[in-house]
Length: 145
Image 1 (spheres, rainbow, N blue to C red):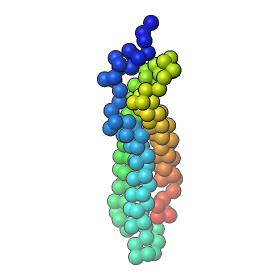
Image 2: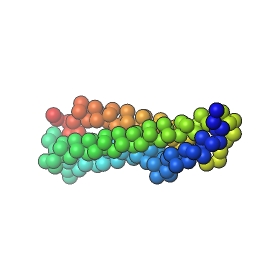
Image 3: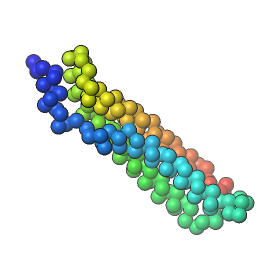
Image 4: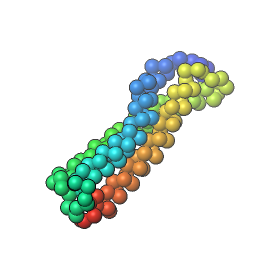
C-alpha cells in the first residue's frame, strides 16, 4: 500500500495552479455579473431614450446584442464550470490522501477547499446564467415583442 504522503509528493505536478483555481472560482460568477449589468445598461439605453420609455428599442441591434452577450456569458460560465470541475477532480486525490494520513498539509488543504468552493459557485452561477437567459426570452426589455 502506498504511503499517503508519497501520493501527495508524486501528484505534486498534478496540482492545479493558482490561476486555474482562481478561474474556477471566479469565472462563472463574473460571467453572470457582466451579463446582468451590461444587459441592463444596454436595455436602459435602448428602451428609455431621453428618459421616456418606448415600445420598440431605439438601438436597432439591442436584441441581437443581448443575444450575443448572453451566449458569450454562457460560454464564459461553462468554461469556468469546466475548469472548476477539473480542479475538483484533481484535488480529490489530495483530499483522500489527507483523509488517510489524518494530517493537514498547509498547501494542499486550501487548494482542496478552493476547488470545491469553485465547483459549487460555478454550478450556482451557471444556473443563474441559464435562468437569466430564460427570463430574457420571456420578458422583452422594452415591453413589446
